[in-house]
Every structure is written in structure tokens, then in C-alpha cells.
Image 1: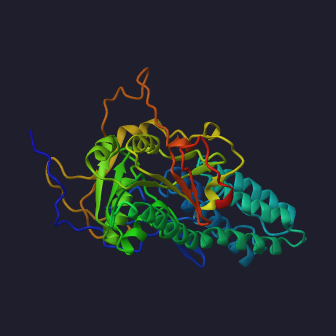
Image 2: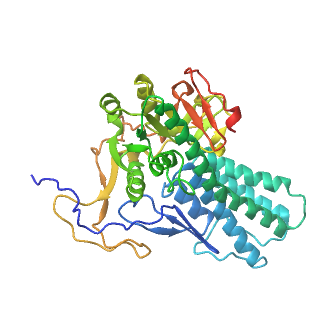
Image 3: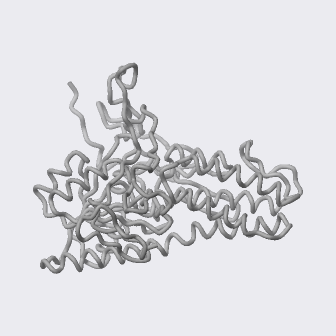
Length: 423
């Protein structure tokens, strides 16, 4: 039997780049294919509603704020293109589109197109409330418009769409500082000088418009000399956020350690962990929080070990229309994803270096492969697969919810958290 060998440490690797999921030009949007990270950087053009939907649905872009930005920016791009050629029959595009925007002949025709597009994009990831919040902001702009010029309506919509993306970065920096300061002040009372924290999934600049939410708190602690080490969990094999977290932490030079999500209990038993810091895809009125699968069990274990559990999310992630977590729609991913894993080919024999796809900026690297890690029978007949993308953490397990507005504490482990002052 040939021994499995680790990847060659001397093999070419992806050079450090500014961490971002989106590149936005005057007449273009490109999405980094997160499924290929960290081994290859590939930018995919996003020229249509279908392109944006597919990038979100396939998880080539992920993170609630980032997918909201992509959806909004795509609408902005198509409207901007139409304004430049308001009377031409077709919008310049590399692909035919069922969501073709007609010439701007009337506000009613534009609104009919807009609402169809908003509904379609919103359906791509139903659990992530930032996406629906962004689409609702655009709907509100359309509803508030009182003029009769389709071109003026298009300009108003473009302004709102671009604000969805632009506002996110400043929010992230503010909530990151609030969360880092709150935690450090709490732990400093026990004589702590540097903290050890754990996070789940990726919540950094690849998942947002920049800096990050939960990972932003960790970055702030590191930048201010208050972090000893960050631990991060590996979840499902095909779409694990850990590879993105590892890329961001290593690029920033933050001391870190990856653990499998089944090892969280052991970590809490043997290491002095100061907090678990996570992001959120939806926080409802009573404080129940939907986040990447594996968050709930981490929260339960943190409660058992007396470790603070922090949720860091922008105001746009709060959903005050839903009262309890039981009413959150949980997205079920395709079962096959749970049977697959993606990575570099390192065994059984060294592979020849290959050139990435034409639009990649990565150097020559060992090839990547998607492999099946389960027997063929899994997922067929009675051998079912349970593959939710998210779980819900009850408010009673959450120590605090931090937004860019402030910190909502749950000092006594109550069944609900008052979020009224952090909206």
C-alpha cells in the first residue's frame, strides 16, 4: 500500500492577494471562485442575472453580506448598461438571458422586469437574510419613486444597489471593534492579556465587502495585540469554510489552528478558550440565530464549559419579522455534496504540475480533484443523506449579539435577547 504523502511544501502556491470576493469595474463584475480556493485564484465574469444566481447557488461566492452585494451589483450593472444604450433592443452580454432588460420605454416595463429579477435572485439562498434585506431595499426604492421617467427610476435603483455593497465595509469595522473591546474588557477582569478564541465557518473579507464580521473581531484583537491564537472548525468536506478561513488568517499572519468540528468538545476540555465568535445568516426577534451547520453544537458545548458565545452580524442580518428560530427556513444542500471532497492531488504518486484555467491568476500548481469519499450506495434508496446548510442556535446559548450599533447581552442565559437597542 502506497503511503499518503502531504502536499509538497515547495510546490507553487497562490500568492497573497487582497482578500475580496468581488472585482467591480465600470462595466464589469467578476466573482472569485471560492470552490477553488486556496489553491487557485480564478475570477469568473458575472454578466447576467443567471450568472449571479448560479454563483450564489453553487457557492462559488458565499457569506450573507457578499451574496447580497453580488445580487445588488448585478442589477446595478444591467441597469447601467441599459442607460448607456437605452433604445437598443438587446443589452451587451456574453450569454443569452431570460432576464433581458428591455429598452427603458416606461416605468411599468422596468418595474415588471425588476420584480421578476429580485424574486429570482432572492430564491438563490433563502436562509441568508442579508440577501432578502438587500432585495427589499431595492423594492422600497422602486415603490417610493413618484416620477414617470424610466431612466430616472433606473438611476435611483442603481444608487440603492451600489449602497448595499458600499455600506458593508464600514459596518464590519465598527462591529469588529465593538465585539473585540467587549470581549477583552470581560476577560481582562480575570487577568487575561491575550485571548484564545474559536470561530465557525468563514466570516472574513471573502464573505463580506471587506474586513469581516466574526473574523473581523479576531482580526481586530490581533491588530491590537490582544490575540494569542484563533481556532477554526472544519465542517462539511466539499464546502468547508475552513479552507477560506485558513487562507485569510495565514495571509494576515494571525496565529491559528484548524480543528474538525467533532473535536470542539475536546478542545474545550484541554485548552483555555476565552470565547466562541461566530457570524450569522439570520438573527430573529428573540435572538435565535441561523448560521453554518455545526454552530449549534459549538454553542451547546461552550455553554457546558462556561465559554462566552458571541454572534457578530450587521443590522441587515436581523430579521424582526420572525419571532423564533423554529420559523427560519433552513436550506437543504444537494445530498451529493456530503459525499464529495475537493483538494490538491497528493497521492498515491506526485502529480505533474498543471496550468490553471485561462482566466486564472494563479501560478502553475498541482491539479485539484473532486473525489467521492463514501460508498456508492450512500444517498440511494434507504441510505439517505441529511445535508442542511445551516442550523439554529437558541438565544439561551448566546452570550451576546453584536451589530455595528452596539452589544446586546444575555447575562442570565434567558430564553430571549432584547435586540431593540442594536437595530
